Image (tube, rainbow, N blue to C red; front, side, top):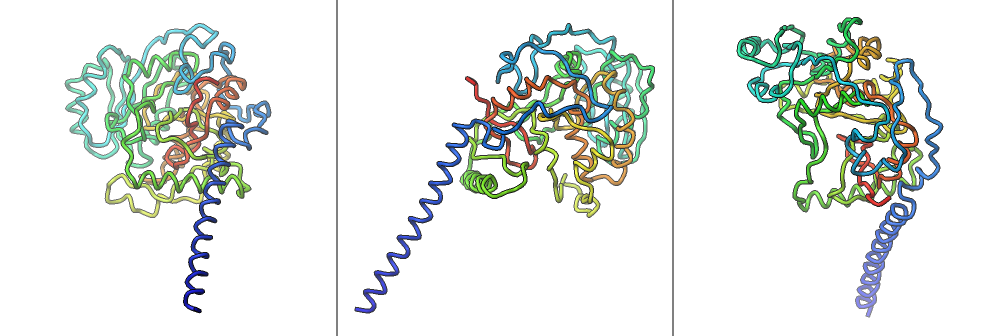
Length: 400
């Protein structure tokens, strides 16, 4: 009799535990759906007043004028601003220059990518001692009439070379000129769901009033899902809902449950982006495990030290280290970028390089009106929860 009673009590406990887990998961799911559908951007965004954001640095780019916010749509604005959105006329560039950061990869691919685009000059920054490859390319290249080879120490990756070029750019350079920065691994894309643009397309974007064109665009469809990915997505869903309920940090409260095939945007929520951090980063090289990658310097502290601010509430981010920008925009941030170069000289594989990658577009792009930023926020379903694209708007409501 006692055994039967004990078995019955045990079964009731197990059944109750299963029901409790079910109701907890059901509550979390209902909360996520209610918050996502009814409130759109999330409860914390409901009380966000975008009009509170103002320029905070003397190096900020100017605001540009675009058509009314009914032009801000998933099709026109999610990954680039289409030309018909701008009120001011687009001025043609006087000339283009090409800046290549080179380590050891072959450069024959440039022959094809230079077709259709003329460059006044090209500078190759050699960082790994393989000058023979660069010189062989120079002897047969047709990208530019004038080519110079400059040797730099192998520190700071592509971002150090970009900062070096900007810090040494003469102030007398034609402000209408476009500078295209690329690296020798331009064709090797490891960024999530991204594909490369042609040189012509990158420069076209930089010529527009925004003044900046990214070498990558996050437009590829997602890869096939595996059970491990589904489990991880479910875990992140629960994790981020719990953060919304209990976290005091505004930056930790975003990133709700999301559909795998939603579109990733180039626009990032600035407050979340600035909380970006990484403990390690491996490029498959022997010295990538070096402890020098870590730093006590946070992303937000670096911006403070440079006396620069990213656009807010939204910042464009260009991943991959390849982009084009107007000289007028580049010269405006020459002083803080010169300071940045010192931070990037600390080592080869360092966290500061990832900070720089996430700030180039924000520093060099014209700023879009606050009303347009507000509309983009209202179009977004959530932000991307993974660290590699932390803060990116994710999932665009086509009929908002």
